Length: 286
Image 1 (tube, rainbow, N blue to C red):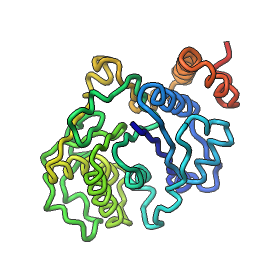
Image 2: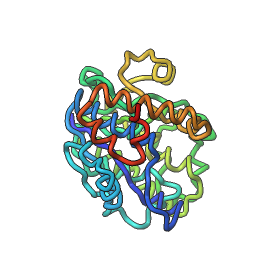
Image 3: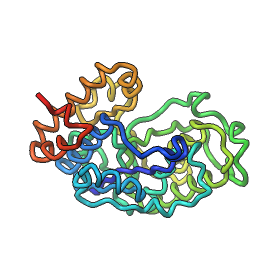
Protein backbone atom coordinates (compact mmCIF):
# COMPACT_ATOMS: atom_id res chain seq x y z
CA UNK A 1 0.00 0.00 0.00
CA UNK A 2 1.49 3.32 -1.03
CA UNK A 3 1.43 5.93 1.70
CA UNK A 4 2.18 9.62 1.53
CA UNK A 5 2.79 12.57 3.80
CA UNK A 6 1.95 16.14 2.80
CA UNK A 7 3.66 19.44 3.55
CA UNK A 8 2.45 22.68 1.97
CA UNK A 9 4.54 25.55 3.35
CA UNK A 10 2.56 28.51 1.95
CA UNK A 11 0.42 28.89 5.11
CA UNK A 12 3.65 29.25 7.14
CA UNK A 13 4.85 31.97 4.77
CA UNK A 14 1.56 33.82 5.16
CA UNK A 15 1.64 33.58 8.98
CA UNK A 16 5.33 34.43 9.32
CA UNK A 17 6.45 36.44 6.27
CA UNK A 18 10.20 36.58 5.85
CA UNK A 19 10.88 33.95 8.52
CA UNK A 20 12.96 30.87 7.62
CA UNK A 21 10.81 27.77 7.37
CA UNK A 22 11.10 25.30 10.24
CA UNK A 23 9.22 22.39 11.79
CA UNK A 24 9.14 21.90 15.56
CA UNK A 25 11.41 19.14 16.93
CA UNK A 26 8.56 17.00 18.23
CA UNK A 27 6.95 17.12 14.79
CA UNK A 28 10.19 16.07 13.10
CA UNK A 29 10.44 13.10 15.46
CA UNK A 30 6.85 11.98 14.87
CA UNK A 31 7.39 12.45 11.13
CA UNK A 32 10.32 10.05 11.33
CA UNK A 33 8.34 7.48 13.31
CA UNK A 34 5.35 7.86 11.00
CA UNK A 35 7.42 7.30 7.85
CA UNK A 36 9.61 4.50 9.17
CA UNK A 37 6.75 2.57 10.80
CA UNK A 38 4.73 2.82 7.61
CA UNK A 39 7.65 1.45 5.60
CA UNK A 40 8.14 -1.43 8.04
CA UNK A 41 4.49 -2.45 8.26
CA UNK A 42 2.61 -1.32 5.16
CA UNK A 43 4.74 -0.37 2.14
CA UNK A 44 6.46 2.55 0.50
CA UNK A 45 5.88 6.17 1.44
CA UNK A 46 6.57 9.48 -0.26
CA UNK A 47 6.30 13.14 0.66
CA UNK A 48 4.03 15.29 -1.51
CA UNK A 49 5.07 18.86 -0.89
CA UNK A 50 6.44 22.06 -2.40
CA UNK A 51 10.04 22.97 -3.21
CA UNK A 52 10.54 24.84 0.04
CA UNK A 53 9.71 21.69 2.00
CA UNK A 54 12.05 19.60 -0.16
CA UNK A 55 14.90 22.01 0.53
CA UNK A 56 14.14 22.10 4.25
CA UNK A 57 14.09 18.33 4.85
CA UNK A 58 17.14 17.87 2.63
CA UNK A 59 19.02 20.55 4.57
CA UNK A 60 18.43 18.54 7.76
CA UNK A 61 19.43 15.28 6.13
CA UNK A 62 15.97 13.80 6.65
CA UNK A 63 14.97 13.31 3.03
CA UNK A 64 15.95 9.63 3.35
CA UNK A 65 12.81 9.01 5.44
CA UNK A 66 10.66 8.73 2.31
CA UNK A 67 11.79 5.70 0.33
CA UNK A 68 9.40 6.67 -2.48
CA UNK A 69 10.94 10.12 -2.73
CA UNK A 70 9.92 13.73 -2.21
CA UNK A 71 7.68 15.19 -4.90
CA UNK A 72 7.17 18.99 -5.09
CA UNK A 73 3.79 18.66 -6.80
CA UNK A 74 2.27 21.39 -4.64
CA UNK A 75 4.34 24.05 -6.42
CA UNK A 76 1.53 23.93 -8.99
CA UNK A 77 -1.24 24.85 -6.54
CA UNK A 78 -3.16 27.91 -7.78
CA UNK A 79 -2.50 31.28 -6.18
CA UNK A 80 -6.19 31.91 -5.48
CA UNK A 81 -6.33 29.28 -2.71
CA UNK A 82 -6.70 31.20 0.55
CA UNK A 83 -3.79 29.81 2.58
CA UNK A 84 -5.13 31.31 5.83
CA UNK A 85 -8.61 29.79 5.74
CA UNK A 86 -7.56 26.67 3.81
CA UNK A 87 -4.31 25.92 5.61
CA UNK A 88 -4.57 22.18 4.87
CA UNK A 89 -5.50 22.61 1.20
CA UNK A 90 -2.24 20.94 0.26
CA UNK A 91 -3.65 17.64 1.50
CA UNK A 92 -6.56 17.84 -0.94
CA UNK A 93 -4.31 18.70 -3.87
CA UNK A 94 -1.98 15.85 -2.86
CA UNK A 95 -4.86 13.35 -2.82
CA UNK A 96 -5.91 14.70 -6.22
CA UNK A 97 -2.42 13.89 -7.55
CA UNK A 98 -2.16 10.33 -6.19
CA UNK A 99 -3.71 7.21 -7.67
CA UNK A 100 -5.72 4.73 -5.63
CA UNK A 101 -5.10 2.59 -3.71
CA UNK A 102 -3.24 4.95 -1.42
CA UNK A 103 -3.17 6.17 2.17
CA UNK A 104 -2.54 9.75 3.26
CA UNK A 105 -1.07 10.14 6.73
CA UNK A 106 -0.49 13.27 8.76
CA UNK A 107 3.08 13.57 9.96
CA UNK A 108 1.83 13.37 13.57
CA UNK A 109 0.02 10.06 13.03
CA UNK A 110 1.93 6.81 13.54
CA UNK A 111 0.58 3.53 12.22
CA UNK A 112 2.27 0.79 14.23
CA UNK A 113 0.77 -2.26 12.46
CA UNK A 114 -0.26 -3.50 9.04
CA UNK A 115 -3.76 -2.20 8.26
CA UNK A 116 -4.70 -4.34 5.24
CA UNK A 117 -7.40 -6.24 7.11
CA UNK A 118 -8.94 -2.97 8.37
CA UNK A 119 -9.42 -1.87 4.78
CA UNK A 120 -11.05 -5.05 3.47
CA UNK A 121 -14.30 -4.44 1.63
CA UNK A 122 -14.30 -0.62 1.61
CA UNK A 123 -13.79 2.03 -1.05
CA UNK A 124 -12.51 4.65 1.40
CA UNK A 125 -11.69 4.98 5.08
CA UNK A 126 -10.42 7.48 7.63
CA UNK A 127 -9.23 7.37 11.21
CA UNK A 128 -12.40 8.25 13.15
CA UNK A 129 -15.83 9.89 13.02
CA UNK A 130 -16.43 13.35 14.44
CA UNK A 131 -19.55 14.73 16.08
CA UNK A 132 -21.39 17.53 14.30
CA UNK A 133 -20.54 20.27 16.79
CA UNK A 134 -22.05 23.54 15.45
CA UNK A 135 -19.00 25.65 16.33
CA UNK A 136 -16.82 23.37 14.20
CA UNK A 137 -19.29 21.93 11.69
CA UNK A 138 -21.98 24.60 11.26
CA UNK A 139 -24.86 24.48 8.78
CA UNK A 140 -24.63 25.89 5.28
CA UNK A 141 -25.65 29.40 6.36
CA UNK A 142 -22.15 29.83 7.86
CA UNK A 143 -20.51 29.72 4.42
CA UNK A 144 -21.79 33.05 3.16
CA UNK A 145 -18.46 33.87 1.53
CA UNK A 146 -18.78 30.94 -0.89
CA UNK A 147 -20.04 31.77 -4.34
CA UNK A 148 -21.51 29.32 -6.82
CA UNK A 149 -21.08 26.15 -4.75
CA UNK A 150 -24.21 24.00 -4.47
CA UNK A 151 -24.76 23.10 -0.80
CA UNK A 152 -28.32 21.84 -1.32
CA UNK A 153 -27.28 18.59 -2.99
CA UNK A 154 -25.44 17.44 0.17
CA UNK A 155 -26.67 15.41 3.15
CA UNK A 156 -25.96 17.51 6.25
CA UNK A 157 -26.79 14.69 8.68
CA UNK A 158 -23.80 12.43 7.96
CA UNK A 159 -20.94 12.61 10.46
CA UNK A 160 -17.60 13.92 9.21
CA UNK A 161 -14.48 11.77 9.23
CA UNK A 162 -11.13 12.91 10.57
CA UNK A 163 -8.52 12.61 7.82
CA UNK A 164 -5.33 12.34 9.88
CA UNK A 165 -5.24 9.00 8.09
CA UNK A 166 -7.33 8.60 4.95
CA UNK A 167 -7.51 5.64 2.55
CA UNK A 168 -8.77 5.68 -1.01
CA UNK A 169 -9.40 2.37 -2.73
CA UNK A 170 -11.64 3.78 -5.46
CA UNK A 171 -9.97 6.08 -7.96
CA UNK A 172 -13.35 7.32 -9.17
CA UNK A 173 -14.37 8.39 -5.67
CA UNK A 174 -10.94 9.91 -4.97
CA UNK A 175 -11.33 12.15 -8.00
CA UNK A 176 -14.93 13.06 -7.19
CA UNK A 177 -14.14 13.99 -3.60
CA UNK A 178 -11.09 16.10 -4.43
CA UNK A 179 -12.82 17.80 -7.36
CA UNK A 180 -15.72 18.74 -5.07
CA UNK A 181 -13.49 19.93 -2.22
CA UNK A 182 -11.24 21.97 -4.51
CA UNK A 183 -14.27 23.53 -6.19
CA UNK A 184 -15.53 24.57 -2.75
CA UNK A 185 -12.19 26.10 -1.73
CA UNK A 186 -11.92 28.04 -4.95
CA UNK A 187 -15.48 29.31 -4.47
CA UNK A 188 -14.41 31.09 -1.27
CA UNK A 189 -11.18 33.06 -1.86
CA UNK A 190 -12.31 35.59 0.77
CA UNK A 191 -13.14 33.02 3.46
CA UNK A 192 -12.45 34.56 6.86
CA UNK A 193 -12.72 31.59 9.22
CA UNK A 194 -9.60 29.53 9.97
CA UNK A 195 -11.45 26.39 11.06
CA UNK A 196 -14.94 25.84 9.70
CA UNK A 197 -14.14 26.35 6.01
CA UNK A 198 -11.16 24.02 6.10
CA UNK A 199 -12.75 21.17 8.02
CA UNK A 200 -15.82 21.38 5.80
CA UNK A 201 -13.68 21.03 2.67
CA UNK A 202 -11.46 18.28 4.03
CA UNK A 203 -13.51 16.25 6.49
CA UNK A 204 -17.21 16.93 6.14
CA UNK A 205 -17.25 16.79 2.36
CA UNK A 206 -15.54 13.39 2.51
CA UNK A 207 -18.58 11.73 4.06
CA UNK A 208 -21.07 13.92 2.20
CA UNK A 209 -19.49 12.85 -1.10
CA UNK A 210 -19.43 9.21 0.02
CA UNK A 211 -23.12 9.37 0.94
CA UNK A 212 -24.04 10.96 -2.37
CA UNK A 213 -22.14 8.35 -4.39
CA UNK A 214 -23.18 5.41 -2.20
CA UNK A 215 -19.63 4.22 -1.66
CA UNK A 216 -18.49 2.03 1.23
CA UNK A 217 -16.58 4.14 3.75
CA UNK A 218 -15.34 3.17 7.20
CA UNK A 219 -13.93 4.72 10.37
CA UNK A 220 -10.85 2.73 11.42
CA UNK A 221 -11.08 3.72 15.08
CA UNK A 222 -12.95 6.07 17.41
CA UNK A 223 -11.82 8.79 19.79
CA UNK A 224 -12.19 6.84 23.06
CA UNK A 225 -10.23 3.91 21.61
CA UNK A 226 -7.66 6.10 19.88
CA UNK A 227 -6.77 8.12 22.98
CA UNK A 228 -7.48 5.41 25.53
CA UNK A 229 -5.39 2.68 23.95
CA UNK A 230 -8.35 0.43 23.20
CA UNK A 231 -7.88 0.11 19.44
CA UNK A 232 -5.38 -2.73 19.46
CA UNK A 233 -2.26 -0.61 19.29
CA UNK A 234 -2.72 0.31 15.64
CA UNK A 235 -2.46 4.09 15.80
CA UNK A 236 -1.04 7.03 17.72
CA UNK A 237 -2.19 10.54 16.85
CA UNK A 238 -0.35 13.38 18.59
CA UNK A 239 -2.70 16.20 17.57
CA UNK A 240 -4.45 16.74 20.92
CA UNK A 241 -1.16 16.67 22.85
CA UNK A 242 0.68 19.41 20.96
CA UNK A 243 -0.58 22.44 22.85
CA UNK A 244 0.09 20.75 26.17
CA UNK A 245 3.71 20.21 25.15
CA UNK A 246 4.12 23.79 23.98
CA UNK A 247 2.90 25.01 27.37
CA UNK A 248 5.09 22.65 29.41
CA UNK A 249 8.82 22.45 28.49
CA UNK A 250 9.36 19.40 30.69
CA UNK A 251 6.52 17.55 28.95
CA UNK A 252 7.93 18.61 25.57
CA UNK A 253 11.40 17.25 26.39
CA UNK A 254 10.06 14.01 27.84
CA UNK A 255 7.95 13.36 24.74
CA UNK A 256 10.87 14.04 22.40
CA UNK A 257 13.18 11.80 24.41
CA UNK A 258 10.60 8.98 24.30
CA UNK A 259 10.34 9.38 20.52
CA UNK A 260 14.12 9.30 20.22
CA UNK A 261 14.31 6.18 22.38
CA UNK A 262 11.67 4.42 20.28
CA UNK A 263 13.51 5.34 17.08
CA UNK A 264 16.78 4.04 18.53
CA UNK A 265 15.13 0.79 19.59
CA UNK A 266 13.11 0.06 16.45
CA UNK A 267 15.23 1.72 13.75
CA UNK A 268 18.81 1.92 15.06
CA UNK A 269 20.49 2.65 11.72
CA UNK A 270 18.05 5.40 10.80
CA UNK A 271 18.16 6.79 14.35
CA UNK A 272 21.90 7.37 14.02
CA UNK A 273 21.22 9.62 11.05
CA UNK A 274 18.32 11.41 12.71
CA UNK A 275 20.47 12.05 15.80
CA UNK A 276 22.82 14.09 13.61
CA UNK A 277 20.14 16.74 13.07
CA UNK A 278 21.23 19.66 15.30
CA UNK A 279 17.77 20.43 16.74
CA UNK A 280 17.21 16.74 17.52
CA UNK A 281 20.59 15.55 18.77
CA UNK A 282 19.92 16.65 22.36
CA UNK A 283 17.02 14.20 22.65
CA UNK A 284 19.22 11.24 21.69
CA UNK A 285 21.93 12.12 24.22
CA UNK A 286 22.13 9.73 27.16
